[in-house]
Image (tube, rainbow, N blue to C red; front, side, top):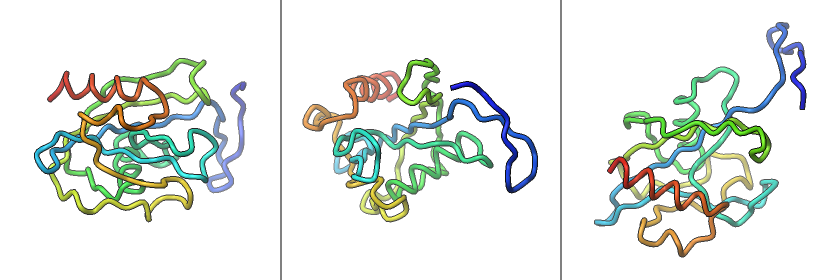
Length: 161
């Protein structure tokens, strides 16, 4: 896809259409004495990887920062509020051969709040089928959108916690 100009209907200003920017947030917590990662199962309203697990992710809205998008996406998809967490950047993935050519900012944080608040009611219908805290010792028991998810989760945890 080539970049091209478009007039924003809300502002009347020229904007450029190009690759999308997204965030992925790996949220860790200790739940009932087990180190866990917050994950969701992709719902039937999504175009790919339906029924598979992943960490929270989503696109940046036009009027927010990367961290604001991370906080919003985690809340929308899981009901967990991470705005008071220390949200740190793990890496940026910008390979143009990546699925959908998305530029992905991977964040992580440790969450110490309540664990019984999980819900998918704040997201788009059909986006998230299920939300749960998955013990790190049980990552292999779930079908992830890619093997890299499990490796990335383990790497971030072992490197930082």
